[in-house]
Length: 265
Image (cartoon, rainbow, N blue to C red; front, side, top):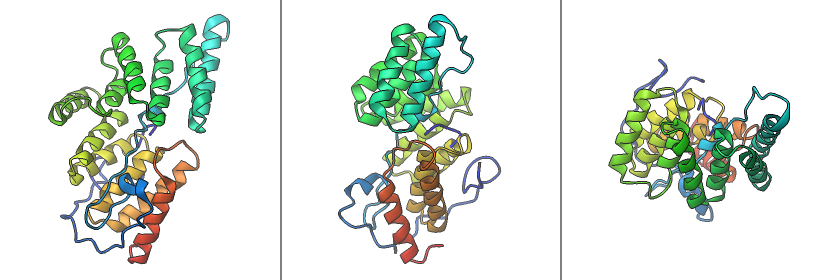
């Protein structure tokens, strides 16, 4: 999720914006009731649902310019292994390897981000907050950690978080993680036009991130732009074959089928 969430896109940013109409009346069949996890993956007629794709951790990159000797080499090896395991969805292995790196270098940025990412994927919000807070104690304005922390539940009032994210974005306009965190905040409040713009900006800065693609699709779906939504659902599923993703692929496929049945291109 990770970020560089640049394909032609449907809204704010990069000269590829297109105006979005007001939400259209829902005519697409809802996904089967058994798809309870679709509540954050695809809209329903009466009360559309949103995707919940934390994914900020997909940007956690292992150190690349590591001197291949002594402790630094060990740290680099552990980081590289942790990142590979995380991308493959092997979270227990990733946590172990990032932990090894952190034991060797207690203030290592990539290790702390990696452990926070694993905790988010496992739903351990408390541990994730500890990792990101520890990182911010060393790097107080780190945009990835700030975006991740802002996206955690109970991280402050929505208006305060929105203001904070906008301030951070002025200083870090190319941070996909910050745009994504802002999009999630807007989607929590059903502000779908703003969410769509923020998710597109996240996607624009990390075009291969499957969670950014997926949430962009969900926001377009809520806005009644079902043809574009279908396109980005498909791209999200394709990207998820190459990179770890948080969204429910089954739910995404079901939504695509519903859109196709309703005649969406």
